[in-house]
Length: 484
Image (cartoon, rainbow, N blue to C red; front, top):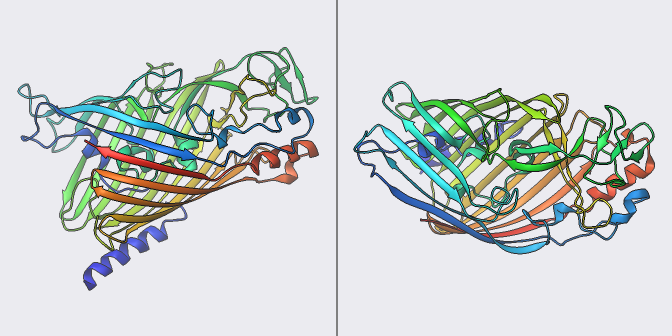
């Protein structure tokens, strides 16, 4: 018992020491998602999971807006609605419904594995341009040189991404991603919107181009009463990558006693999940991971301590130009035990990015009508975002796990007037009926801060910015996960 307690203390100490700047969930996802056990894997194993749920916010509406933006008073901002439709502040949904098949290409070869998965739920992935089922994963892994390297070809989760995004979604302990994971790492692809433009020189709207500093809103003249930064461009969303890319990965892991060393390097399109490459440039991303595994455990809930580092870099075509996009991060995770009283986990992850900073669409409309406000993209490499999360969980009974996560996202830290700080404190509980069936409850206390009030030279703009930030609601989520 004392030895076990010492191991638990070590795991918590390492996670705590890394909480200021360090990813989570130490399971070797490159192994679990990309390969099959040699010699015993069937030709085809059908599997999948469903996640029905309910989400609620108080549905607070905007008030106190002044000037041209006053027309939006009494409307509900998008961040107080539930995605992907953002038409209601509370709703039941089938958030995810995925079914797939995986196996070995026998009798062709026991050294070739495949992995296929499709999404039928209602989420941002399947509803980016009207509802449509989406193939999320389709890859083949070649293990002929497994003593040295394995190769994976097709569509799959990138190794050079946050641990929060790389891990299998059915194992994500919270209903929602952290703010920094959702906004900075989950890449949205956009195209610039035409129409009326905001002229920063005289703080007025025009119906035509007003030079390189113009900020353009959605189609139609005379819309939008709140300007964005001079290098922010209004745009429409065409899709996202769901932490995945189409490409070729070289990866492997090596075990020396309780120590496991893992690497993965990928060359990919750098495009959205259901499209081919949009330019001649390719993304490079990769990760290094080292784990100390307790008691020779394995699988998605193994007991270990893991430290890892990852990064990605590529170019994006947007608004007639090419822009560099970089993301990187590192972290630590510790887990000891599962589904027994006293079993614990603790984790921390830091993420940083430059270029192609996505700011979303805070308003349901731009002029009080049904015309939806476009999103804003800050493409220049001078624009940046950074953030982290720390989280922990403990089983208080064989079935009940209590958990807590704090996450922070500093968006556009380079732009004093447009810098915003997102903070969320998520209190959660999970009831595991079995390892493959659980009910998750989350309540997130959210704040949004205008970081630099002194950067505003216009009192109305400052007042409007703070009025919007103060409207950011807390959120409750209830979700059932069943893996089959």
